[in-house]
Length: 373
DNA sequence: TAACCGTGGGA
DNA sequence: TTCCCAAGGTT
Image (cartoon, rainbow, N blue to C red; front, top):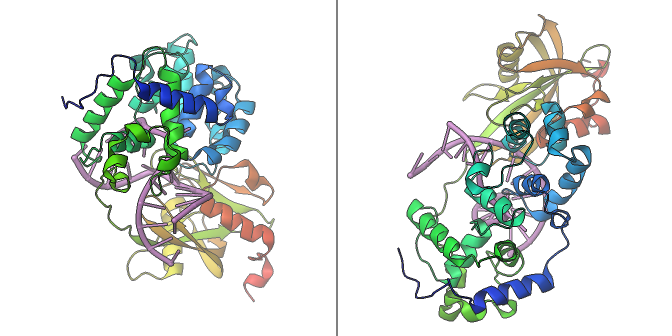
């Protein structure tokens, strides 16, 4: 164990300074109006790798539609994904739904109330378990997220690479020793609020920081160099095609992605990644044949969408297409259907396909007879 | 362990 | 434009 030279088992000005600042400056966030473990749980899942301002409208809509864990467990997964549409990391929605059913079926509807029991729920890791335990149940549990990592590496001027397990273990151990008995909730939440508003990654506002007197990095002038992390590799780029296959009645064909993997369970215009040397129409015809077992004619290009995912970038080329032969049947997709432009709103789409839909609605990509003349 | 998993905002 | 980053978890 690394000796930080501090004894945090006794009351310490660090705790009082942070909690006093938090009580004076904390924002009025929707999930701070309750201790309902279901509500805290929902907020923590949504807040994983997602900023507060992004989460708020999703949180409000979700809670209105699913006010209790019972309501969530009894809903179809497709309804949950629709409410998650655009929020990203969709495995969170699938795990949330599965966990709700576990609470109902395996735990008699009683939400788990210990760190270990919470961590048994799918989608709940060490951080989220600590957050629910301390914020909903008032337990003396630590948590370690990006904010707390930043604050602790600065407070104690920790130079280890935070991507390494050894450094993470040190930080978890430190976070555990720092939790003030009986005040874990405001302490943990105060750390995250401080990290978000004052101890920011690029431009920490040390002049307004209630902890600057305790901060070793501030004393040494190294706050901009903490935390230490190794740079990540550049992301590759791919060309991707999408087919807007229109029937005579104006409906278009959409396919549901497999429930595991990227964007699992969401709907999209069928298509896929272009192989080296392959033309865009060839790519489209191949992908549609492999996905749905049909042959299409590729018409006019409707537009392009550029998008950056976590680990790669794409340029998506959307084409107007017609069915030539065959009957669609699910091969590499989970499901498929024909839908009119109005009906598309019932399905959950990734943002890229939402942009294609927007093109169609704006008339930028006019479908119909003039495609072929 | 390291790769994978989305999206939007800010510098 | 490009890069980083955000109340992480899973495999």
